[in-house]
Length: 314
Image 1 (cartoon, rainbow, N blue to C red):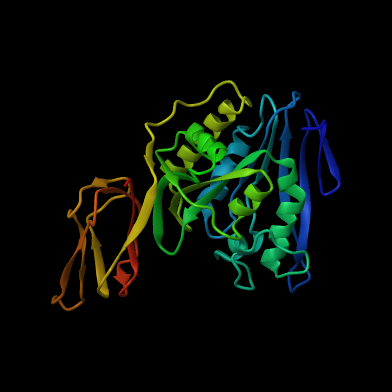
Image 2: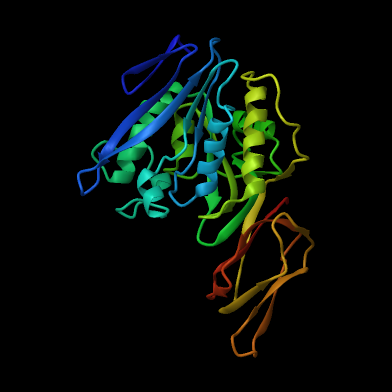
């Protein structure tokens, strides 16, 4: 990278730390909404790592992961640069909601447009001001709609560089996930920047284990990139190339026997669907061997609802 990184026309030199505020838009009250971008540059040049949380406003685990790394000064590298954005979706964060006031999902709005919706405007700002300065990044996410995720790192195994970076994080689970059209990860890849997706926990709930795993994994990645000398020891990572959801064939009350991170065998009973009147008792059976990486915590379900997200290998 050059001697200076330029964001929103502000130059940040080697050895400097600076907060750059990106103006996005105004609320109906005419209150200005800015997106704070924290930049930490070591005296010695090196890789530029982007850390983002809160792309979905109610996914607080990602916000907390980045916040703790700032508080503990983990984001201050010995070599290279860390760009940290704890809350990407300021609007959703304020309202405890996933999307934006217009109902759009930022993570399906990339690469964005300057004159588009609020989601596209925010996506455009990230792609214009941040991604050109970045070598790689981690986008921290949380399960949504009462669904909890086991700590996992996602990337496309078809992209060699992304797979190498994901392996370096040493998360409990590493899973193949194809690039999704109009996602942040896909748009960044087209610009030559690989973004990993780290998932843990449930929306609007702290997942302490997953938060600390995310922090440890970030340090391992920084060590791999040569940005720091020391990092926590890695986990014994379980690698999966496929995943799918078990869906209910009946409406009713979901009683689960499965736990996040649990490995199971084909035809194992993972739970049941019961009705409020004591008549229905439908078993939820594993269709094949696998591991629970996501779990629906809402007991009231309708036919076709996703119950258990599991990873497996063919």
